[in-house]
Image (cartoon, rainbow, N blue to C red; front, side):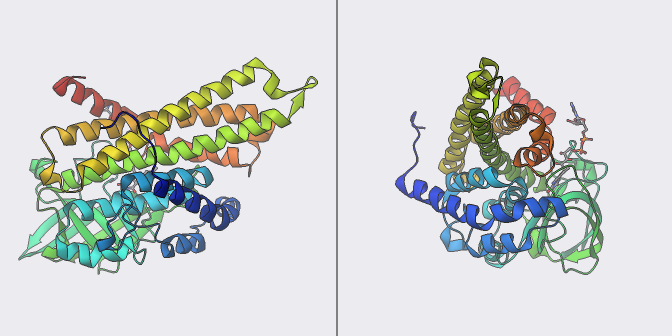
Length: 397
Ligand SMILES: Cc1cc2nc3c(=O)[nH]c(=O)nc-3n(C[C@H](O)[C@H](O)[C@H](O)COP(=O)(O)OP(=O)(O)OC[C@H]3O[C@@H](n4cnc5c(N)ncnc54)[C@H](O)[C@@H]3O)c2cc1C
């Protein structure tokens, strides 16, 4: 890894183009989307048409071929504007396309990855169940063989994009006694399959533009072509997607906290009390300085991790010994710090806004509600600390 990191002119141009596009196409719809608690169908359709649902996917599979660095640039920009749109893109790209890109056969890539990367089909990822959250290896949804086919039966919960997806990556137990070590398989399930049903969609504190759906698999039958990464390899497939997701969550958090800090800075310079702008007071200056420190530190962490994932490539079989563990630790560190720092920055930014920060419909109020879930989903921060500590205990610092 080089010690210095800088963006190429092409990456800078991509950031500028994305920023202009998002300001024009997404920013205007966010307030109403949040208030109505509706999936932002039209702005998402525009993002899909622009290729933004396949940023890290190679061009030969229908994507933009910009790697994880390009993908994080986009999510940082999107995070500045809206966390719901970021979650929709992330659930599709990090969690939906990564399993296909890293573990799919050529035939699976042609059938599922290409249309997903082109934005023609929406993906979701379904690991969580009522009895299996942090303990994600204890999947109860059953996969029972029927000749060379499989029958899936069970209930999944909290699936982002679950209501709108065309295909869901579903983790199911082919051998519950084996648990995560050989007992879980990833399946590609088209949502128009017989027996597949969307159940309850949750109402939430934030992320009002996203669906968080229960999925019911009532004896859904799939063929052998739906098995992704091999029978019994599903937990590995699921965790590989989360490694990508946790770094991209860091990028989206970076954008969210940078936007909040920018709003706080502007407000502090324009709002006067006791005859001076708020920014004249050290108590406010220190809050702004703390924000800047966290933003700068996180920017290095996110892009270092993204570059590392690009350098490793997408063929897990070719990774050197120890590379997976290192990548996983790095992703957990990014996820944990990004979510907690964004919480601290957005909270301080809200405080600087005074009463206005608490008023429904201001960007800072929405950011405050949207941020909280980042400490919980894609593995809670307690679980990230367990992952980091386990790796420390086995490989050292
Ligand atoms: C808006 C939203 C979107 C989501 N999107 C998806 C999705 O697209 N796909 C998907 O599969 N899932 C999704 N999830 C699920 C999410 O990943 C889980 O909610 C999360 O992993 C936590 O699981 P849980 O809710 O069952 O909490 P639990 O596992 O029950 O944990 C409860 C508390 O106990 C703590 N805890 C648990 N075990 C330990 C331990 N060993 N040591 C210390 N503390 C522990 C946890 O950290 C947490 O604080 C989503 C959830 C939400 C709310």
